[in-house]
Length: 366
Ligand SMILES: [Zn+2]
Ligand SMILES: [Zn+2]
Image (cartoon, rainbow, N blue to C red; front, side):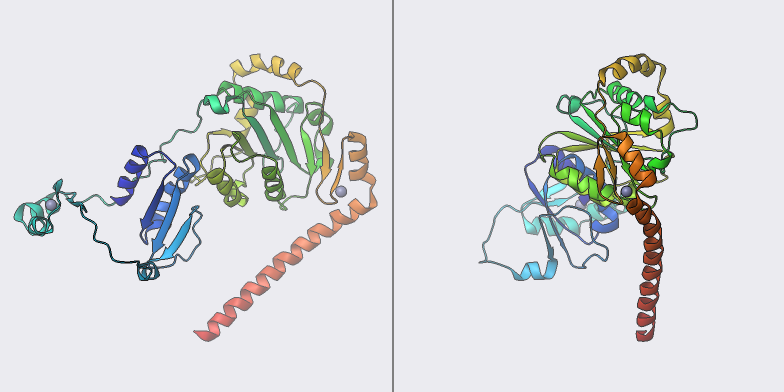
């Protein structure tokens, strides 16, 4: 009930505005939907609860209080007239406390409560928000930054890598997005069609699997992109959850939108609010209509301006030959490639050891 009222209030009070929720039900009851709402419209949010949530809430709040300590902060007592006393079940309202008390105890009211119990399930308003939106004028020419995880979303067997960029651009254009597109491909570039990708201006970033570098790149990218400028981020990966906490923060606080592509549809709708989603292979296959636009896009891309980076050695170049040399013959690079998997295994072992120790410690106390 409270949640529905809040959604209604949002409809009538566009931002900037502040709302405050005093409830213990935010975590697990409101948060999924509210988190998605926050990515669309920014309101200041104050939270108060009597039980501190066990898991930190991803909601972006301006202030949080413990309800009891908040009540202690009282200033001078001021009597304010005009509090509204309202019975939702009977749609009865009054400003007189006496009348309200009388109503609550009345036969009509009790009967109404029983035959028409108050609906207390949270209706998630964002649940039915469609997946692929036509571009609004503000975003129609906004720049689009694509992060492509080639390990979880590789190129299909026999697919011409020259077609990646035009396929993406055509899919964007179908929805009305025609801003400049920058694509960075993450993967083991010893085994990717580097020539074809870079000739269409796809940047390459060499990294080892299971070592997500995206979060740090996304962070760096954010510094160069003013928060108020309309910008679109796209993640092509089956592991968007690895960086979703980071993305949600960017979406709450900036004028950004998010596109997603994955090789299979996630079973649960994420708390990330997207403006468009695709299945990776169907995005690449494109529709007939898209194929017509394809030629036009390819000719537009002009001179290749791809950059090549190795995240293991912090090595960067604009020459594909230098990059290939680095990956295949550089001794330091070879050492890094050997070292990293070992470090990773060690980390996993360490992590397990500390969790076991933690458990044992707690066990003794019980
Ligand atoms: Zn009533
Ligand atoms: Zn390297």
